[in-house]
Structures are given as C-alpha cells and as structure tokens.
Length: 504
Ligand code: HEM
Image 1: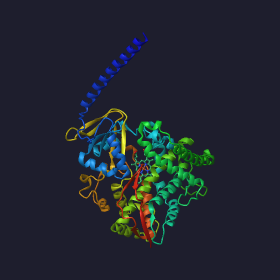
Image 2: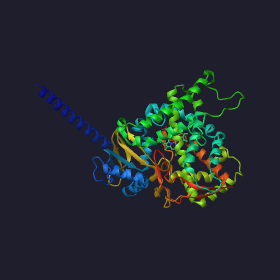
Image 3: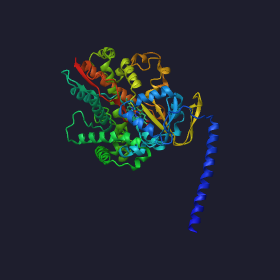
Image 4: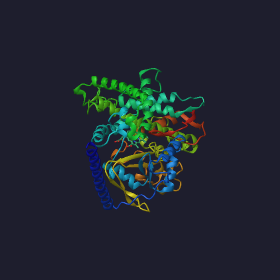
C-alpha cells in the first residue's frame, strides 16, 4: 500500500517536472525568437563540456605560472570577440565585444548582478557598496558617493606625511629596494587616514602594536578573498579558521575607531564641518558618513568595502607603472622634464590635473596593465546580449538566469582595431592624439557601478610619482625580468619592482 502511494507520488512529481520543463522550453524558445537570438558558434575546444574539469586544471596551472591573462588574450585572438566555455559545471560566456560589455554594465544593468560576491566576501566586508546588489547597493552608493567630491580628493596635505615616510624607507646609497611592498603600505596608510581619520602607519608601525596586528590580519583576510570567490556556491561548506580569526581582529579594530567617533559625536555637530577657528576641518570619510548614519555595523561595512576597493588598486597601479619606468629611460626622462617644471614645489590638485605627461603615463599603465583585468556579471533573469551569436558572431545571444558573462579588460585593452597595430606597445604619447576608446577603455569600469574612487586614485598616484621624482633623479632596474602577473583581486607584478633610486 505504502509502496504504491510512494510510487504514485514519484510519478506525479516526474509528470509535473516534465510539464514544467516543456513549458519553460517553449517560453525560452519564444523569448529567443522575439529577440533574434542565435547560438554562440565560437566554443573553446575542450576534452569534455559536461563538467569542464580540463579547463579548471588549465586555469589553475596558468595561474601558478602567472600567464592567465596572456592565455585568455590568445583565446580571444583565436576564437573571436565572444566565445563560450564550460568550467566546473558552469557555462561561461566570455566577451571583449564593446556592445556586450556596455549592455552588461549600463544599458542592461538591471539584468545583471555580482553573483556570489556577497557570500564569498561577506564575512570580512559585510554588506556595503562593493558587495551588494539591487536596493541595498543603491542605498550604499547614495551614502558613499557624495563623499568623493573634489574637495575631498584634493586634500594632499595629510597625504604628504605618508609620502615622506615612504621616501625615508628608500635607500639613498644605490642599494636595491622593492618598491611594491612599500606602495602597498603607503596606500594602506593613506586610505586609513582618509577613511578613519587615523592612519595605521604601517610604514612605521611597531611590531606587536595594535596597528601592526590590524595590518597583518587585514592582509591575511584579504589574501583569502579571491579564492573564496572562486568557490562559488561551495563557499557555504568551506571552513577557514585563520580567515575567521583575521576578520574578527579587523572588525574589532575598526569598531573601536567607530565607537570613539560616535562617542565624540554630539547631535548638534552632525551637520558641521567647520572647526572652532572657522577653518574647514581635515576631511575624514567616517565623520562625513556620521551625518547620514550612526549604525555602527553599516559604518564598518562601508569603511571596509572602500578600504578593499581603494587600497590594493592604487598600490598596484603605482607598482605596475614603476615596473615600466625602471625599464624605460625614455619615459622617465620625459616625466622628469614635466616634474622639473614645478621647480621642486609641492603640486596642488589643479597643478596635478594639468600635468599632461603623467596623465598619459597612468592612462597607458592602466591600459596595458589594468589593475582589475578580468571581471564577471551574473544574469539575474533570462536576458539577451546584443552580439556573439550565429556563424559571424553578429546576432544577439541568449543568457539564461544565473548565466555568467565574463569580460576581459586586459584583452580588450590590447585590441588592435581600437588602439592600432602597436596596441601591445607601451606608448604614453598615444593619449596625446584624438584617441577616444570610450567603452573600449575600462580600467575603472563603466555605467552605474563605475569606480567612485577614480579621481582619488589618480590624484594619489600622480602626487606619489611627482614627489618621488622630486626626491630621486634616476632609476635603475635591478631585476631585468619581464612583467609577470600576480593576480588576486587586483593585478600587480609577481616579481615586485626591484630598483635602485639615485638621489638628486
Ligand atoms: C587605480 C586605482 C583603482 C582602480 C583601477 C579601480 C577600479 C575599479 C573597478 C574596475 C571597479 C568595479 C569593480 C566591480 O564592480 O566589479 C571599482 C569599483 C569601486 N571602486 Fe575603484 N579603483 C581604483 C581605486 C579606488 C579607490 C582609491 C577607491 C576609494 C578610495 C575606490 C573605490 C571603489 C568603490 C567603492 C567601488 C565600488 C563601486 C560600486 O560598486 O558602486 N577605487 N573600482
């Protein structure tokens, strides 16, 4: 009797599923037809496309060898602008087609989200601008965005203290120094100064101090994020005690700063930003945020989201740029002419904006060595991308709900049809021409989620370059290796930036 009931139950479920499946297939077929979708013909050749274990292995090996970006570029050279591949049970649509990237990031923005980023990063970063989607993200963005106006990014005085610390760590006797770890310390110090109003002074911190513990815990936690991101849905099964302990240390440190600020806050003061002498106060992001929210958890989440988004990115930009400078005396020379034009004066925001060669240099560095070289978005409903279907790849393609679209800024920035036959060459002067790559140049992303810290980062990087060249007249490469990628959440040089700097 029981057996018959159970069998009937199973049968009913199977029949319901079959009807649901047929209904879905008809609906999807109609949707595809209405939108003129055609299948993607360009597929990455694989041993099997059921799970796609071979591709996973290839990617892991390429990652170990620091050639994952070049491998991806070669695939675009071979298989065209848009192609599909299967890896660990997921189908990836890969694209460097500008029309598709524009659709994901702007015109079709609402159909795409960040996928599992919240689950992977949430333990460290909570829910803030960098980790959330939809209404939560809109709220975060509205809260954070007004704090990146010109007045804030133009405050170079507090930055100067850290630059001087940075310069004091560089040997003046011609011995070799790796600038990369120093850049990472510098940007941690400036970012914490800007965000918390108190720098962790990692360039000068005492071993065992609270700041030192924070820095170590922060670096450890962050170094685990990229791997957590790769685990996708499996993240809920993954345990990492070191990561959990590091997150706790980071949270306790930031919470203390927040509670101190909250204690100091008098409701009457919340709208003010003028000190007792009538002078504008030094800009502190946390203090500005307190005008909109006093929720300690939200404050911590937003601060950590921005610290993550802003610290490694700027350090990587500086590292990649100095990796080039050490190998290109011609570029160093032109840069020096521009910096010498300041006659040793500290530049202000306006002066920096008018320094054309530095701008071209940073543009070119971000083009050939984009700090966020690959990225992805996840469809949150059945949707369409404008191109990639049919034999010539020019018809729209269907992306089903949950589908992953990966876009490759590194390969796109090397497209010869956008940048000309010398696209692979490092040539800052190309930006002096009427080059307008528009969506073909995306170091800071585009659309509603465009980087809020772009001006902050460019100001900080330009200021660092000027002050360094004012202190040192020459640079020698002490490594002779080619640039090899070190790719985690951002991308810098696997061999660091080993140089000798010659004092003026
Ligand atoms: C060279 C330096 C930088 C580069 C290349 C860069 C690049 C990017 C990119 C590509 C994104 C999009 C990420 C995604 O949505 O998947 C992004 C987002 C973001 N960046 Fe930057 N960034 C830099 C510096 C900064 C700085 C200094 C800050 C803050 C102080 C900052 C704050 C943010 C924030 C908050 C977001 C998230 C925006 C949102 O989702 O609405 N970035 N950045």
